[in-house]
Structures are given as C-alpha cells and as structure tokens.
Image 1 (cartoon, rainbow, N blue to C red):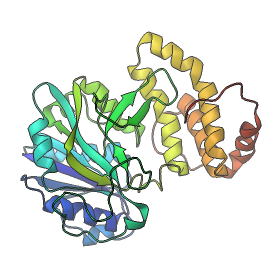
Image 2 (cartoon, rainbow, N blue to C red):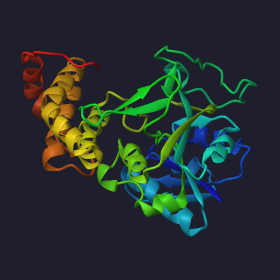
Image 3 (tube, one colour):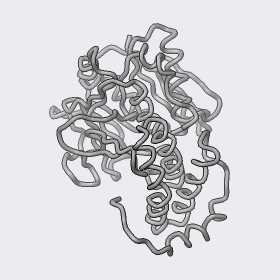
Length: 326
C-alpha cells in the first residue's frame, strides 16, 4: 500500500489544492493528513482517508513521523511525503512508484516553482502537457525550476544546493519524496531534533542508497509557505542552524575539518547578505548560528529578534577579505 503523508499547519487553502491534485492521481494510494495543531479552523474543511491530529506543532519532521508511524502500522509499504503547498500531475505517483527499484533508496519528481501571482488560484484540470495554467519551465526565477537535482558540499557553510541540468542527484527533496517504509523505519525516520529544513537531506544520507529525480514526473511548489518564504526569519533560522548539524553528522573527517574552518567566516558573510534586506532576517541568521553551537534542536526559540539588530548591523559593517557565491 502506498501512503501519501501531507502535513497541514494553518494552511487550509494550500492543503485543499494539494489534496485535490492527489485525488486525480492514476495510482491508488491512501492519504494521511497530519495536522500540527492548526488554529485557523482549516482542518474542519479538509477531507482525507486518515486524519491525524497532533494537537501541537511538531515541525515537519515530527509531523511526518507521526503520519508514517500510523501508515506503517496499517500496512503501508511505501511512503510519499508531500508538501501541502505543492501539487502534482496525475501520473506522477505512478512514475515515481515504478522508479523505486531495489537499488534506489529515494525518488523525487522534477519540481517546478509556482508563479507567486498564481499561487492563490483555485485548482483546475491539468492540460494535456501536464502543466497547469501559468507554469513555465526554464531559468526564470518566478515560474522556473524549483528542484531538478541536489548537490552536496559538506565542506562549506551552504552544504546543499538545487542545481539544474542532467546528472546524478546527491539527495531528494522532502517536498515530494518517495521511500520504502521498511527503509524509513530502519534509519529511524526524520530527525525530529531538526524540526524543519535539512531533515530530508539527513534522511537521504542515512538511507545510504541512490537518490533519483525522475524528470518525467512533475510537481509544482509554492515554497516555504509554512515558514513565510525562503528568506523569512523562520526559514533562515532553521537553515543556518541545521546545516551545521547535518554537515558534522555526515561529512568525512576531512570535510568536517574544512567545514569548521569555513563555518564562521562564510556564515557571518551570508548573515550580512540577508541582513542587508531585512534586520530581522540578519538577526534570525545569527540566532541560528548561535543555536547551532549551544542548542541545535527543536523549534525556533521565542526570542525577540530586535535584540540582535545591533549585532546584525555590526556584522554588515565588518570588513570582508573575500566573498562567497550566494
């Protein structure tokens, strides 16, 4: 049995579109909707085969683990983790299912980015070319490729990048990720200490097998809807904190040494870069770096970011001998 696990946290409209796209899938499956303590009443309007109410926000990792646990107990042999702000083509699950061969640990579809101005449109029928109205392929930031393959650099502060073009993928995206239930159980599922972000990369590295992106299988993603966007303070906090945990957990001894040497310099530079766009963003990045050293687990602490504004502004004014690619 294929179990599709969708996490909802105050995202009723997004989740509704997600579930409607799943309902059009050509491959039989069972949808497990996991609610992480939503307070917007969204759960009252959503319909799924199984609804799990966590009562509080367990993060992406904890919420998905709760869904996977029940699905496996009810006989699931494959688990498809799917972001609630994403949709897929009717034949995507079928193509992913066929690609999960014995020598493959995880598979993801090719994921395109949803144009921001179209993100709130109600779902409609997919045209024959499997692209909803308003989608474009190509290099354009708004409406281009969101995930085609992943590249790991465990010796740098930015340990993972989404890259385009053909070639092997070092990891699959948790936005749309299919794995075998037995493998997921074997490695202990997602690391709940990470809460959100990088838990998919950590899982793929724990699985230890080949990761594949199936270009013929398509999905579409708004991106970071639950955290307020990829450059929101919450997103930046988890990115700056969790990258260190994953790098030091999975890197080789040489990579770990290189990472430690580059961590502070590259991290402060990136924090100054995002801080130039928003004082809260710069403060959240610095808070993430601080927590990476003293408390690298759990939800983002309820800490007044304005308290770190002076430090963020000072970091922007520090002289830099070099610049890293962003």
